[in-house]
Image 1: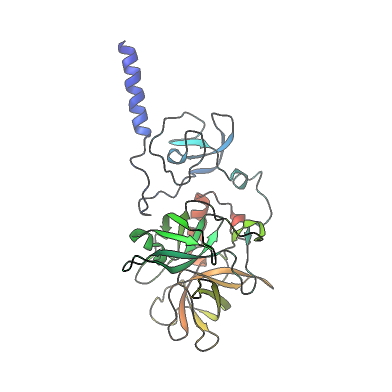
Image 2: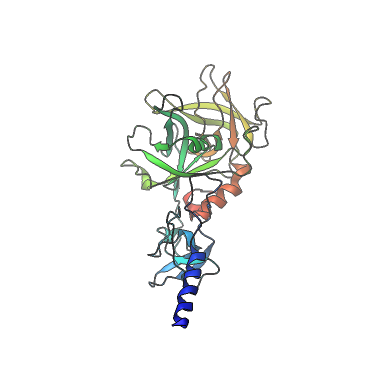
Length: 329
């Protein structure tokens, strides 16, 4: 009897240590955006499927990866993974293992006056509580939206959702993660990701339902195009000449760039939206993000290049293969 009691007591203690302290909150400072602790560690689950080693807080009882770690309780599972990691199956396993990774491009560049993965960010107006379009962004993969850290901060104060231009479906933002070196005063490293509750459903005819290609090695300079929205929330394209460094002392960081409208009075941009620069003969790629609205036909941009390592780390942690967001070696 005493022996059985000890076994039960020890089992309870082990189970308690495996229970996360609390469910992840919507505050990006509390959210652990690192579900894949050993993404190259291929293992076999208890139900005999090929999986990867992930943090226990992202593995369901059915041994499937729940990226956002939304469940509160778990049981201790003994397997082939180190530490507090469990063998789980990710829905995009074919994009994770090197043996099955497709060599074909998994993202889309943009042709002239097009932005197939651009989205509008909405929130309830703090004063009127009415829905308003307040920022832009670009879908990477099918569930992650690249935007500025300043736009992402709105998620702390109110519900934020995403909508394709001209569409009616709303995609709620689950949580956000912004660059840890982001400085709200200087605007340095003003970049963030919004994580949606579900995949974007692209309109029929969009090639392979692919997200944006990111120019992590593409200089933010030359004749580029920035995005804004008209009164009907449709995309508008503003040609600008982009040079390194800020147009003024404001936001004069190492990753800043100045965009000047080619025609007088023709500067209109949406904060958080992508800046498209040439990457080939006919197509463009995201080289930066809009940091502020236009003033006297000029605006402040931020280059992706200085944040390339951080961007890659975040998308890798989300098990997004490199081929799904870049075409560069």
